[in-house]
Length: 250
Image (cartoon, rainbow, N blue to C red; front, side):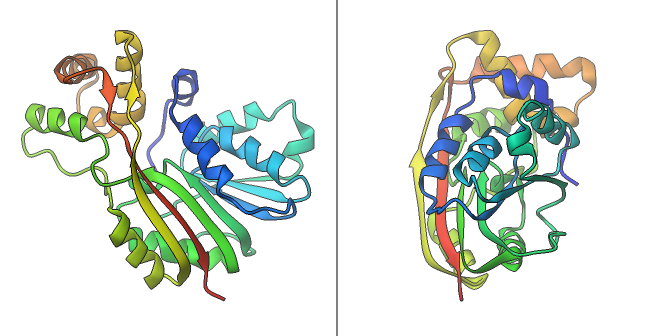
């Protein structure tokens, strides 16, 4: 099962994920009746936008983090008009998905780079997507947070790889092998500047360094976050987004 997140701090940060979600949603072709799988729904910001985009459809919000899904449900607590069309599912994208029906759309933002085996990931998604259905996603791609990774490499000897930041071409090949057609992929630099030192540290701690911090004693974690922030050449997270659009073969 996926690692747990600090959903409260996550939602309090100035997240570039908001613009990534808006851009990914804009690439969907919808008539408003679709059933959409939000793969890696997190705290539900994009889930709400999806529900509003399919007023006669449904959304299945899937995530591996119990705390993220609890925050998602809290976000929709005063929106029964949307909640009635939502199914919340805690599940792991690395294994076959426990859906009872095929969906019309798979939508995902800032999730796939946490999945080590993209061949299995795309096969799992294809299995729950109806023939002709859309897959539209955004995630970290080749070169993503390279400056942060260089700092981590200097600080941690023999640090194991954390993220499979894939290239556009290899991702297109994997999608085709999993049964997708009309595949379009690209890599797009999208740096995020965080000039406030406290915000930069909270961002690093919550969004990026979680798996590194999990390996440290609790009393060493704050110092490690400070060390990473101080060694960055500038207060910028040098994101590179891997985006993809495809349809499941009929």
